Structures are given as structure tokens and as C-alpha cells.
Amino acid sequence: MFSIKQTVYMFNVLQNTGMINCIFSLENLEVSCILLERERERERERERERET
Image (cartoon, rainbow, N blue to C red; front, side):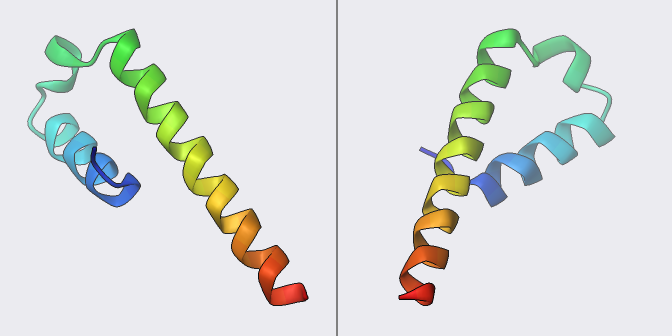
């Protein structure tokens, strides 16, 4: 599985080369959203740990 940073980088490369319209699908978008939500949850956990 790719990290959020890797996913964003790959997205930007594809977007900049004009290939994004050809290969970016709803399924990929859904996976990216899930990964982003997981990363946000990890960040919330880290913030809670810092507060305690």
C-alpha cells in the first residue's frame, strides 16, 4: 500500500503529464479517500497522545 505522500506525488505526476483523465477512476478516488481518512485518524491519535 502506498503512503499518502506517495499517492499525492503519483497523482501530481499523472496530472502534470495529462494522463490523469485516462486512468484516474472512481475506484482509485475511493481508495485515496480511505487512505486519507486513515492518515487523518492517525494524526488525531497522535494529537490525543500529545495532550495526555
